[in-house]
Amino acid sequence: MLLTIDVGNTHTVLGLFDGEDIVEHWRISTDARRTADELAVLLQGLMGMHPLLGDELGDGIDGIAICATVPSVLHELREVTRRYYGDVPAVLVEPGVKTGVPILTDNPKEVGADRIINAVAAVDLYGGPAIVVDFGTATTFDAVSARGEYVGGVIAPGIEISVEALGVRGAQLRKIEVARPRSVIGKNTVEAMQSGIIYGFAGQVDGVVNRMARELADDPDEVTVIATGGLAPMVLGESSVIDEHEPWLTLIGLRLVYERNVSRM
Figure (cartoon, rainbow, N blue to C red):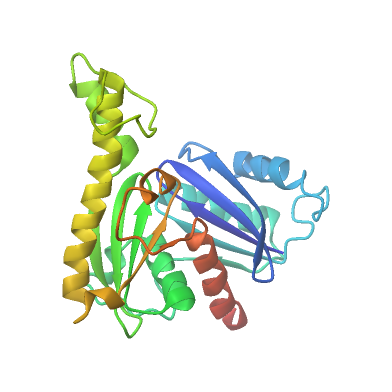
């Protein structure tokens, strides 16, 4: 079994692969204060309930692949792999790790590991040109050329950040549940805010993707647009440009990067 761990700014997603198939997944909050020992206990609690794994930490795990946008958490997970999974091959995505995707940006080292991993999975699953829209803490748009190169992207505030900002900065507004309202024209403040978030973000996605596609390919219709991230389902039905929804895109990319690196270890 391969354990994949995608550490985002808000949530950490874990996936368990049996070959190419994801057989289990978990989503937990990202807490930069957790120590390696606390993370080990958390992992044991989650995986100890799975019928394909043993009761002891590490039983049934043949490999680990990790990417993180939070450096302190990456540091602690590195310690987890050393202390609790010492005999298990582990790939932590950082500079020097082979991904198979050339990064054609001004400073490749500043591109988030999760964005590169998404590009790896997009190329493998759908080929290029492609655009990955990841609905996380930020909404990111990442462009992959027809030759499978990561050529850059767009970063915008995420859905939850926008909801929180409205609640904090609006004197008569409050934090709301992100849900589809009854109609675009809200009949009350909550529905008006929900409409602004859902349809506003759908319009943002359509506008940004259309502009990116025109730059990315001579024929924009050739560009495959893939949505991922925990909040993607909120926008899928309202966006006109999304071709594919792959909720486990980053975990799949981690599996691919693990396979490309484990033989070199």
